[in-house]
Length: 362
Image 1 (cartoon, rainbow, N blue to C red):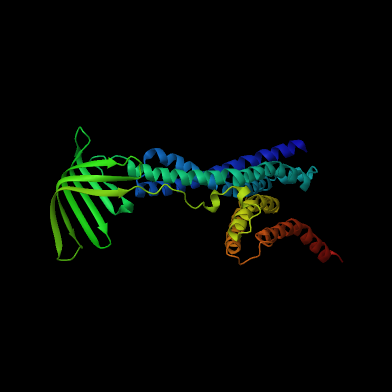
Image 2 (tube, rainbow, N blue to C red; image 1 turned 120 degrees about the vertical axis):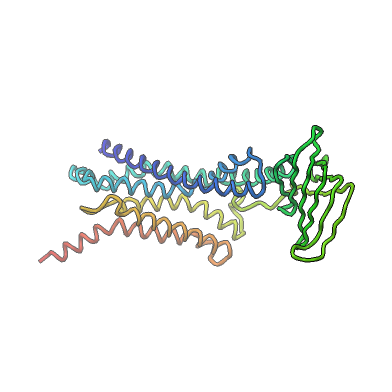
């Protein structure tokens, strides 16, 4: 039977890798879009974009492995049943134990990997991403103005454009738009000088020989002011300490806490490896096909099971964090519900066979 188990392990591993890589590609595409949208809005420099994409994907990869494992097992077993290879193996004496041994050889290392990612790597990636976002935001603000490009500051309330730059770094043909509520200030100047404070916490744009128009769009009253010199101060985003998010906390910080939010986060991290074990138990009966069934007949059921499982976990985490469920109950009721379903699915063929035998008995 070792030859059969190696064959099953190879088929399930190839299916698992194929499904997981496809899901990871989808996740990466979604992550790229989200990071690029944020980078365009906050004007991150290009050097930060790739690292932010990688750190964001690292936080979510643990969610892909359980569904990848479930679909990998269901697809591999479905192909074997559809091509009658499993019927041939069972006729030679292969039983459920042989199949289960190959399944768990694949599932146990993946479960350990999920635990490692969820307990250690994902929190570190979340903390690194948050720190890099702050650094990217400060770098985008403190970067020197480039001619021919619009730059926004203060969350878009200040927009600056310069037509060209001189050899000494001063800008010429400068346009500045500032908004305060409904009030809009539009300033044009022949020359401007951009300076950054020594502590890196503030900067200013000094405009020379210009004109400022101030008013509310659509109103008939406005003010025009000519000036020889005007200073526009800009505050760099605060780099002081900030509140640590739950997903940035290490697992050691969550253990032993009485805070409902921290308990919910800890049980969520524990829940993913437990979910993987439960889904593995459910994958074997889901992969079993009746004669003349298509090889993909149970794939939609596997996807539905994972979607229900994951959404109940998310809902349970929210209820636990808001104190609507007791910490002792936590998310264990979700695992118990699906564990019961997995046991019922494994026992159902024997129960149905017993019913048929009772009906056929004289």
